[in-house]
Image 1 (cartoon, rainbow, N blue to C red):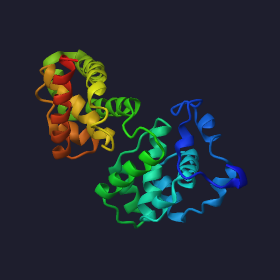
Image 2 (cartoon, rainbow, N blue to C red):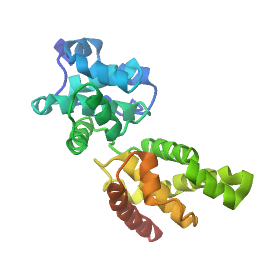
Image 3 (cartoon, rainbow, N blue to C red):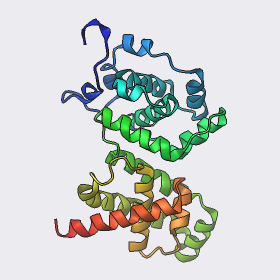
Length: 252
C-alpha cells in the first residue's frame, strides 16, 4: 500500500479484522481517501445516484470500490463498471438496489443499459472484491420490501379482507416470518449456486414458495414478481433452484 497505489484487487476490503456488513464509517476507513480522490467519475454517475435518491455515502463507497479493482476490470466497459460498483456498494451498506432500479435510473439520465450485462458486471466486481454477491441479509431486506408492497396491493387487500376480515394483515405478517425461515433453510445449501444471481429474484422466489406452502394460492408468481420488480420468468427459474435446495436440506 506504500506510495498510495491501490492493490491489485479489493481483497483487503474484507480482511478478517473487518465486518464487511458493519457500519459505513468502519468499512470506508479501509479505502484511503487519496485513492478515492484519484478516481474521477463521470458527472452522470452522480445524476444516477440523485435519481435513486440514495445518500452521498453510496457514491463514496462505489468510488472506493472502483479505485481498488484490478486493472483487468478497468479495461472493460466503464459505464457498466461504475453502475455495478453502485449496486455492490448498496449491498455492502445494507440498502440493496435492484438491477432494474439502477437501469431505470441510468435511462432517466440518457443512458441505455442492459440489466443482463449489468448483472454480469456486478458478479465480476463482487468477485474481485471477494464480497458475497448474495448475502442473506440483502435477500432478507428484499423479502421485507416485497411483503410491504404486497400489503399495499388493493386487489390483494380485498381478497385477504374477505378471507380474514379486519385481521387480513396478519396473514402477510406470517408470510413474512415464514419466508425468512425458508430462506434460512435453503440458503445453507444453495449459497454457491446463487453466487452472481440477483437477491431480489431469490427473495421473490422465496416469498412465492412460502405463500404456496401456506395455501395462499392467490399470491401468484406474477403478483410477487410485480411487487419485487423482477420478471416472472426469472422468478420461475429461481424457484426451481430453491426447490432443489429445499429438498437437499431435508437430507442434510
